[in-house]
Length: 201
Image (tube, rainbow, N blue to C red; front, side):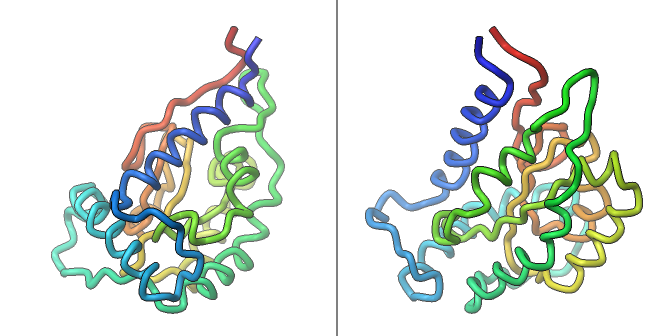
Protein backbone atom coordinates (compact mmCIF):
# COMPACT_ATOMS: atom_id res chain seq x y z
CA UNK A 1 0.00 0.00 0.00
CA UNK A 2 1.40 3.36 -1.02
CA UNK A 3 0.37 5.98 1.52
CA UNK A 4 -0.79 9.47 0.68
CA UNK A 5 2.38 10.94 2.14
CA UNK A 6 4.62 8.61 0.12
CA UNK A 7 2.80 9.20 -3.14
CA UNK A 8 2.39 12.92 -2.69
CA UNK A 9 6.03 13.29 -1.72
CA UNK A 10 7.20 11.38 -4.78
CA UNK A 11 5.03 13.46 -7.09
CA UNK A 12 5.96 16.71 -5.41
CA UNK A 13 9.68 16.00 -5.51
CA UNK A 14 9.53 15.12 -9.18
CA UNK A 15 7.35 18.07 -10.19
CA UNK A 16 9.15 20.74 -8.20
CA UNK A 17 12.53 19.44 -9.33
CA UNK A 18 11.27 19.44 -12.91
CA UNK A 19 9.99 23.00 -12.70
CA UNK A 20 13.25 24.21 -11.20
CA UNK A 21 15.50 22.29 -13.57
CA UNK A 22 13.55 22.89 -16.77
CA UNK A 23 14.48 26.56 -16.68
CA UNK A 24 18.20 25.88 -16.40
CA UNK A 25 20.43 25.97 -19.44
CA UNK A 26 21.85 22.63 -20.49
CA UNK A 27 25.26 24.31 -20.47
CA UNK A 28 25.10 24.66 -16.69
CA UNK A 29 26.96 21.62 -15.42
CA UNK A 30 28.30 22.39 -11.95
CA UNK A 31 26.17 24.04 -9.27
CA UNK A 32 27.13 27.58 -8.27
CA UNK A 33 26.66 27.85 -4.50
CA UNK A 34 27.22 31.58 -4.09
CA UNK A 35 23.96 33.25 -5.12
CA UNK A 36 25.68 36.66 -5.16
CA UNK A 37 28.25 35.61 -7.74
CA UNK A 38 28.14 36.68 -11.36
CA UNK A 39 28.02 33.02 -12.36
CA UNK A 40 24.89 32.39 -10.34
CA UNK A 41 23.25 35.58 -11.59
CA UNK A 42 23.68 34.15 -15.08
CA UNK A 43 21.75 31.05 -13.96
CA UNK A 44 19.07 33.19 -12.33
CA UNK A 45 18.76 35.34 -15.45
CA UNK A 46 18.20 32.21 -17.57
CA UNK A 47 15.46 31.18 -15.15
CA UNK A 48 13.84 34.60 -15.38
CA UNK A 49 13.88 34.61 -19.18
CA UNK A 50 11.99 31.32 -19.25
CA UNK A 51 9.52 32.03 -16.44
CA UNK A 52 8.57 35.67 -17.11
CA UNK A 53 6.32 34.81 -20.11
CA UNK A 54 4.34 32.43 -17.89
CA UNK A 55 3.83 35.13 -15.28
CA UNK A 56 2.95 37.79 -17.82
CA UNK A 57 0.33 35.65 -19.55
CA UNK A 58 -1.47 34.84 -16.30
CA UNK A 59 -4.53 36.93 -15.45
CA UNK A 60 -2.84 38.33 -12.33
CA UNK A 61 -0.42 40.32 -14.50
CA UNK A 62 -2.30 40.44 -17.77
CA UNK A 63 -4.40 43.43 -16.73
CA UNK A 64 -1.42 45.44 -15.53
CA UNK A 65 -0.02 47.71 -18.19
CA UNK A 66 3.20 48.96 -16.62
CA UNK A 67 6.45 47.24 -17.57
CA UNK A 68 8.29 45.38 -14.82
CA UNK A 69 12.06 45.59 -14.68
CA UNK A 70 12.60 41.99 -13.55
CA UNK A 71 15.81 41.43 -11.63
CA UNK A 72 17.26 38.71 -9.41
CA UNK A 73 18.29 40.59 -6.24
CA UNK A 74 21.95 41.22 -5.52
CA UNK A 75 21.21 40.59 -1.83
CA UNK A 76 19.26 37.41 -2.60
CA UNK A 77 20.56 35.37 0.31
CA UNK A 78 19.82 38.03 2.93
CA UNK A 79 16.48 38.74 1.28
CA UNK A 80 15.55 35.06 1.45
CA UNK A 81 16.61 34.76 5.09
CA UNK A 82 14.46 37.76 5.97
CA UNK A 83 11.45 36.16 4.25
CA UNK A 84 12.07 32.91 6.14
CA UNK A 85 12.28 34.77 9.44
CA UNK A 86 9.17 36.89 8.92
CA UNK A 87 7.05 33.98 7.70
CA UNK A 88 8.05 31.59 10.50
CA UNK A 89 4.73 32.06 12.39
CA UNK A 90 2.89 30.88 9.27
CA UNK A 91 4.69 27.54 9.37
CA UNK A 92 3.54 26.72 12.89
CA UNK A 93 -0.15 26.32 12.18
CA UNK A 94 -2.18 23.25 13.02
CA UNK A 95 -2.62 21.06 9.94
CA UNK A 96 -6.29 21.02 8.95
CA UNK A 97 -8.52 17.94 8.73
CA UNK A 98 -10.77 17.32 5.77
CA UNK A 99 -13.01 14.35 4.93
CA UNK A 100 -11.36 12.14 7.49
CA UNK A 101 -7.78 12.92 6.49
CA UNK A 102 -5.53 14.84 8.91
CA UNK A 103 -2.60 15.49 6.62
CA UNK A 104 0.15 16.15 5.98
CA UNK A 105 -1.03 17.89 2.83
CA UNK A 106 0.94 18.97 -0.22
CA UNK A 107 1.94 22.34 1.23
CA UNK A 108 3.08 20.75 4.50
CA UNK A 109 5.27 18.25 2.66
CA UNK A 110 6.74 20.99 0.46
CA UNK A 111 7.75 22.93 3.57
CA UNK A 112 9.15 19.89 5.38
CA UNK A 113 11.20 18.60 2.46
CA UNK A 114 12.41 21.82 0.84
CA UNK A 115 12.68 24.52 3.52
CA UNK A 116 16.23 23.63 4.53
CA UNK A 117 17.55 23.46 0.98
CA UNK A 118 20.20 26.11 0.29
CA UNK A 119 18.93 28.92 -1.93
CA UNK A 120 21.13 28.04 -4.89
CA UNK A 121 19.18 24.77 -5.28
CA UNK A 122 16.20 26.82 -6.52
CA UNK A 123 18.19 28.22 -9.44
CA UNK A 124 16.92 31.79 -9.27
CA UNK A 125 13.53 31.25 -7.64
CA UNK A 126 13.10 32.58 -4.11
CA UNK A 127 10.71 30.15 -2.39
CA UNK A 128 8.04 31.20 0.09
CA UNK A 129 7.26 28.54 2.68
CA UNK A 130 3.81 29.21 4.15
CA UNK A 131 0.89 26.97 5.14
CA UNK A 132 -1.56 28.78 2.86
CA UNK A 133 -4.53 26.44 3.08
CA UNK A 134 -4.14 25.75 6.80
CA UNK A 135 -4.17 29.52 7.33
CA UNK A 136 -7.31 29.94 5.25
CA UNK A 137 -9.30 27.12 6.81
CA UNK A 138 -8.32 27.28 10.46
CA UNK A 139 -7.39 30.85 11.17
CA UNK A 140 -9.56 33.16 9.07
CA UNK A 141 -8.01 36.59 9.43
CA UNK A 142 -4.54 35.09 9.68
CA UNK A 143 -4.49 35.25 5.87
CA UNK A 144 -4.69 39.05 6.17
CA UNK A 145 -1.68 38.94 8.48
CA UNK A 146 0.23 36.96 5.86
CA UNK A 147 -0.57 39.62 3.27
CA UNK A 148 0.57 42.40 5.58
CA UNK A 149 3.79 40.56 6.41
CA UNK A 150 4.65 39.82 2.79
CA UNK A 151 3.91 43.45 1.89
CA UNK A 152 6.84 44.49 4.07
CA UNK A 153 9.39 42.26 2.36
CA UNK A 154 8.45 41.09 -1.16
CA UNK A 155 9.66 43.09 -4.14
CA UNK A 156 7.60 43.59 -7.31
CA UNK A 157 10.41 42.71 -9.74
CA UNK A 158 11.65 39.50 -8.09
CA UNK A 159 10.27 36.05 -8.94
CA UNK A 160 9.12 33.97 -5.99
CA UNK A 161 7.92 30.36 -5.82
CA UNK A 162 5.02 28.94 -3.79
CA UNK A 163 3.10 25.67 -3.57
CA UNK A 164 -0.64 25.97 -2.96
CA UNK A 165 -3.47 23.45 -2.77
CA UNK A 166 -6.43 25.74 -2.05
CA UNK A 167 -9.15 26.19 -4.65
CA UNK A 168 -8.58 29.95 -4.51
CA UNK A 169 -4.81 29.62 -4.66
CA UNK A 170 -3.13 32.45 -2.78
CA UNK A 171 -6.31 34.51 -3.04
CA UNK A 172 -5.76 38.24 -2.72
CA UNK A 173 -2.09 37.61 -1.99
CA UNK A 174 -1.64 36.21 -5.50
CA UNK A 175 -3.40 39.23 -6.93
CA UNK A 176 -1.30 41.64 -4.89
CA UNK A 177 1.91 39.77 -5.80
CA UNK A 178 1.55 38.41 -9.34
CA UNK A 179 5.30 37.78 -9.36
CA UNK A 180 4.81 34.68 -7.18
CA UNK A 181 4.93 31.63 -9.45
CA UNK A 182 2.29 29.33 -7.95
CA UNK A 183 2.48 25.55 -8.28
CA UNK A 184 -1.15 24.75 -7.58
CA UNK A 185 -3.04 21.60 -6.66
CA UNK A 186 -6.27 23.56 -6.38
CA UNK A 187 -6.56 24.67 -10.00
CA UNK A 188 -5.67 28.26 -9.24
CA UNK A 189 -2.14 29.27 -10.11
CA UNK A 190 0.42 28.92 -12.91
CA UNK A 191 1.51 25.28 -12.93
CA UNK A 192 -0.82 22.38 -12.10
CA UNK A 193 -0.06 19.79 -9.42
CA UNK A 194 -2.24 16.75 -8.60
CA UNK A 195 -4.44 16.99 -5.51
CA UNK A 196 -4.32 13.71 -3.60
CA UNK A 197 -6.13 12.64 -0.42
CA UNK A 198 -6.21 9.24 1.19
CA UNK A 199 -4.31 6.03 0.55
CA UNK A 200 -3.68 4.78 -2.97
CA UNK A 201 -3.13 1.05 -3.46
